Image (tube, rainbow, N blue to C red; front, side, top):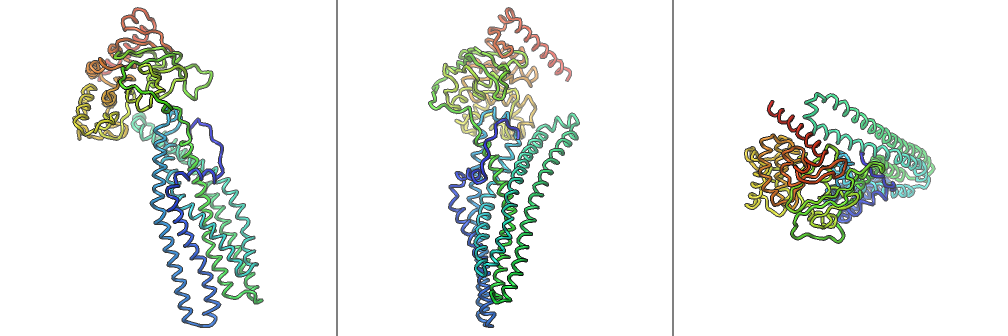
Length: 606
């Protein structure tokens, strides 16, 4: 697992699994009835040896054929009842078990959505995916199958062992004493297997991450001929997982060995003692037969303990992994007493803003080191600076993707931390340089920020057309199914420029009071960029905008420009004023012009 969060104190297995009770509580009645049905099946199994004793010592000894027939029918009835109880158990627990899995999975996903971006920066996506799919499914199977069988089989062993004393105390004592080593074997198994189970499930998460990265980066791997390198790295991870699984299997094998050997030793000693007791008249043949039938009936519950103990530990480990996410502290939440802005004017202000990442060393300097900047309502402010100056970091603060370390960000004079997150993100919209689209239609991707609209309504169509027009995303109409064409996972079926234009259309369609654009035109060719900029001017005339600029043409969209250097504002003013008065700005602009010239030459050569 790749997480920088400190591990919580390890709970005992019962306490760890008890954390599932809130999820299981609505289904407790059905689960309990399923347990009772399973116990009923076990009771039928335990009654059969008693009936056999009566048959052997009664009708068979006396030769009464009628009673033998009726007794045989009685055993048949017990067998049928056992099968019916097993069927009832499965019927009773299936639906509530799926309901528990549904609730846990929904809460887990809801938690992932609410946790801050800093959490997702620290966790591998494969680790989260393995918890969401593999671990939650394992917990469900344990609740509806493993837990019930473990409880019922332990009760069956206890009750059956007590019944063994019914026929003779010596036989029961031998069986019980010989079985004592199993408790020590179970204790050592839990300690070793628990560690291996955690390593296995974490390694499976790392493997899922490797697969996901390879699939998403398949174009890069193929373009650079690095498929064999990726395969070699993947193979090492698979070998590690296989090694852990073999060690797990070895521990289970040792447990199964003792679960097989100990009962056999007990059977052999009991057989010797039983023959002796029968020979001296202290035990009848029927009682001896019933004892061994009962002991045989206990063999499956005893043998199943190996599987059920390993299942228990796997479920405990899966529960730990699930709650590691559910217990993660969420530092970006709605305020206890939120304020509201009915009609936002769009004034965006940074006042004494400092920021550094949560896991940064105390000695590291702040990425943003005392930012003071005010963007007036309706004004377009461009952010320029060299790589690493803090431009992109600054754009993540207005919508609280991250919270400031010190200082505050204000919208219309209100600290953004005093607004509800859904209201804040309704007033401020973002478009990122790395445009991310979802596996949905163009229509759904562009209108994702307009929950107030029915995406099939005429009003939604008007908003959609306007947003696509501004973003110059006319290509969307020419896709196979037009605006209802799925764009594929992360929009990889589209070019980089097409993805950026749809992401820009998405930001525009939200019709925010403040528009934050992190270099949204970097993947566009020069001609398309000019068309988008001309259309954007109409939007920016009435919208407050903060734009990260990497091209001189993007700077030209701005009313004013803010220059960043090493996390500080070193100049604010118009383009011409800064060119005249700010040496660092001239250096930055010359760098942007050089990069822009190289890109234009590359486009001409193509």
